[in-house]
Image 1 (spheres, rainbow, N blue to C red):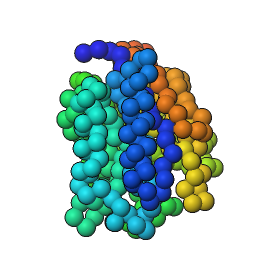
Image 2 (cartoon, one colour):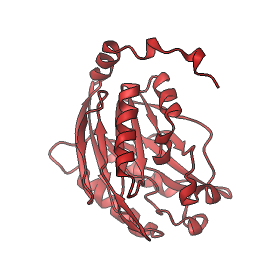
Image 3 (cartoon, rainbow, N blue to C red):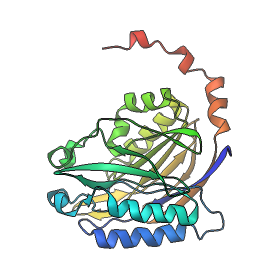
Length: 266
């Protein structure tokens, strides 16, 4: 197992309520991502990239059982021998729609999925979507990792649980808008520092209705240092992470060994 991974974030514009356009945009960006001089080991996509927040039509537009998404991402992952953290998509199961990440390994196998636990009331997610009930723990090339989606990062209990489960990398697809750029950057860096793990966040750009999305996708190391950060335009953002650094940081400042969980209970 290599201790280094090259990660590419697909910071893309998403057309609200236009899955055909979004699938085409993503397919083109995926091809671009593997055509650069340093081919990524892992590709990460933003939240709800298939439909955007067309919540009033999401039951019509959502991907039934994620089948179209799975087909596209599985085939690409296998053909190009790359891991894909498949952003999240509007995923219809029966009569319910979830906000779901699908994860694929280099062989194109679906290795994990996660449905957003904390639905964002300011965007009425709770009126149209069903919340997930399981945390997003998985492994990537034998490395424990975790997944959260957008609003989830405001709940430090969840990232701490993932860290206690062994996660060394936290992947965060998002649609995080203006004017809360300061919150976005601060919360992500805090999650990295307090849990002494890499945080890999992929946000969208562009405008949806009256809402502007600022990008600023980031790859943050366990010290909270930003290794790469996007601007406010569509872009491919890349950095290499060294997983040995996680254990170095955790041994230098032994946060987990100094916890007092018996005092934290409600």
